[in-house]
Image 1: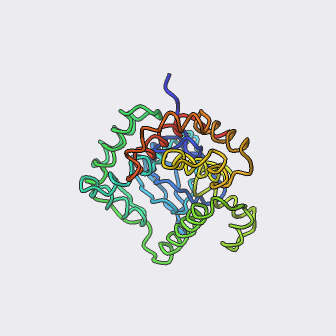
Image 2: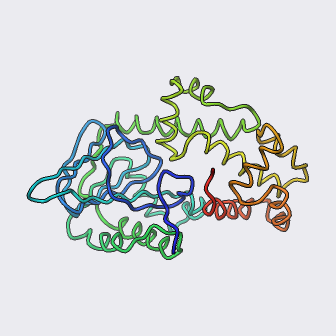
Image 3: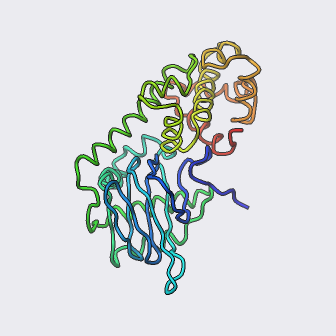
Length: 305
């Protein structure tokens, strides 16, 4: 039986199709969102406005577009039915995303910052593809996602839901804050990095920062920090002759035993075993794509404790 992929968990790398659940607060997610109401009664709250969606419409939102969905239940129509597809581009690789073949899709995704509404019979093929999607790691499902994005990029949106430049600016500011946090972590892995340190940089309370981080990156700050440290350690294990202890220290683990424990929980083997199994990858280290590809594969198979 195929393993299910769920958004907002460490295993989520590409896409997750799920039923809508109401939320009390606006969601600032790190994923692209494709909303498909299958019945009437679904209302999209987007920034300072709201839209009552009709069955078979499609709405595409970019990461960091603040949104919320509410559902109605009536005696006539019963419970509202609405699907939401979460997807990311990370797992496809930057070279592929920047390729000429992906350009039309990339342009559409850039436009989705303004909130794209599609409707009419032109959506029929997209609905058929969504009906056949399954949340598994099977490669056929990756092809389904790419086919869906390609077909959607050929359609003309009926309207843009976000025309206010102030709202777009707010979205961009959120995106910049997330990037600043990621850059700081990447550049200071050897240091003691805490919620308090980063919360101060964003002028937030610790609890506010923790919610902000989880909403935008889909995992907790602690989970993300451990994952980034293990990723960098894996690169050092392949690209250098440093001792295991030195590598653990270089990426910020407080002790060798802690390093071994966290590395094994995430990648399923000790640092020493990882180096031994991947030493032949050194010939490809100039581009580091072989290491990154192996890391992506292994991170898809093992959940952080």
